[in-house]
Image 1 (cartoon, rainbow, N blue to C red):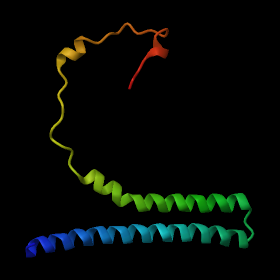
Image 2 (image 1 turned 180 degrees about the vertical axis):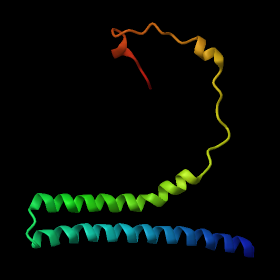
Image 3 (image 1 turned 90 degrees about the horizontal axis):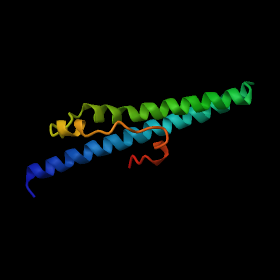
Image 4 (image 1 turned 120 degrees about the vertical axis):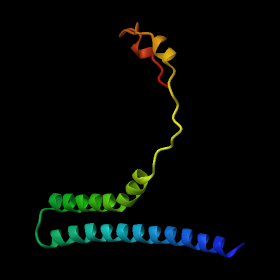
Length: 109
């Protein structure tokens, strides 16, 4: 194993480690804020359904913020250049004689 391969592996490990720790930290913080906020609302006299709703909304917001880096990375990647081209013959072979009587028997799998 050469020096540059070792550096490359260390870089990949650091990327994975920083992503895992960051995601886990954000998730734990979001759960803590959601639960802590709901308990604080109950202690301050807010009705139970509203406190549960506020805690749930905070938790969902934290989940979305945790998933944002994943979505960014997925959308940042360029789509593959290899796309199947549909033959024009397929469009000529379509059967447009489907009616409501045949609808229950359609198989889209």
